[in-house]
Figure 1 (cartoon, rainbow, N blue to C red):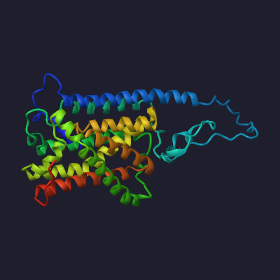
Figure 2: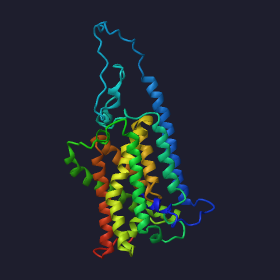
Figure 3: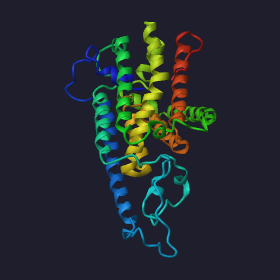
Figure 4: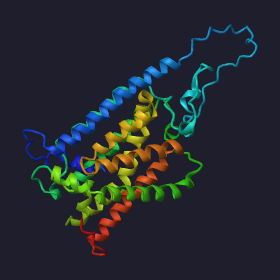
Length: 347
């Protein structure tokens, strides 16, 4: 969740600005730079491929003339927003994907326009400004000072506001229900998808932990692997803070982050960069936005997984269910530790 980054920006919580970025800040900044490079490179490649595949323009048809023998009329635009963009082309000779995994992708890019490049840049810069220079563990301000109830409420309001802006940016182009796939007839798939994704992420996180990767990063950057906002669930003395953080993690983050990152940022980036570029770019931004160097790699894997879940289901509900279960399991474990049900193993 983004509470750690957002709490850093609260006026009451901000420590004096350091003269230079520390190593953790530089790692976060490097992740944003990598995301920008990925976007630029894949956008160029995508543009060149589209030019190469664009068929010659068809002559304007005379309404009174009959179609030549053996030719097909141009396909009508589809009202289904999850129809792959290549089937929406007015040119019947536009080649379809060569098969494989792309034929199962359901997230279309047809509602997106050139103006979306501006909003992509705004989201990118906003999260970069919130997180670079405010990584967890930086500064001398105690965590409980930065996660006061009023700051947590303001953070949740900010996330809903940003989600609302993303929705407002699309509202005149496409019905919101269709845009996010809210009428999902196969909703029951959340029951196998969410637990499978959770166990997969636990496996990935276990690999990073037991391989020594997390420990190496902790030593290099002098930070803890656990997100400060998550750790505070164990240690916060104010029960109001615990309740607000649980609400933010289990309810607010799954809804707002999925609409912002997978509902808007990923397909908008896909419009300019293609599927691979869109997945890599949005996943890098998502990982960096959490302002924890040790968490970048597992959060990147989670973001890639969520992009694929969105593509294969075509509904944001599937993403919300995965994100909800992942965060709910994390919160439940920390609360069980907090109240002495069991102890975390020594790292």
